[in-house]
Image (cartoon, rainbow, N blue to C red; front, side, top):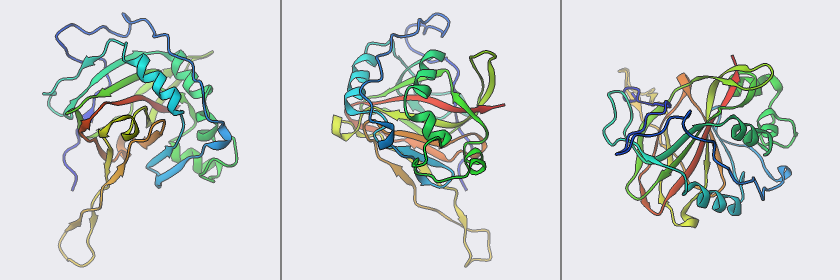
Length: 266
């Protein structure tokens, strides 16, 4: 059976030698424009594991990713603790976190993401009915979590096996929309092509009961390894249906990730 649940804490409390700034103290970064982007017609959703893991290759171009890595390097990153609180997964990386509804809205509305998730275009790669699509995403999708996290994993850094929790959030608007997160969104900006070796995201399916034994024996399933690709978006289900997963140790170079979450109406 899988180990006891360990979770990622999304609250802003990284530790470092200097006291980190809170979201209220941080000014929203002047994020670079989303340019260039591959036309929406050239993008599709790929279901790696049915109902659990979905990827979008080339969601961002390599040129845009390179621009963002350069920009993100200038942000005030803080290092997470190597000795977490009881119940938390071991994570060693550098991160920047801020509530920025304007950026999350731009990532949702100004890229192909909204149309792909909602199935507005027929050739999205999933071929689902509206009801099946709603079931897949966990409800009526209303946007992305305004809480934006930037992760940098340098050589020797990693994120141990854990589960991602769901969070209640508010999507700004007139009126604001009460929402909850259902899927984690990771956007990879680096890969072996940029010198990042290691750092794969690995999922561990629940062991299945064996049919040959009368005892309650379980057969381990092969882990699902998601290799890093520049500009690839990875979506995976979280909360009670989250699969145990980890970010493997980076062996060379740097792994840069932009993190948000898919939100559905509460």
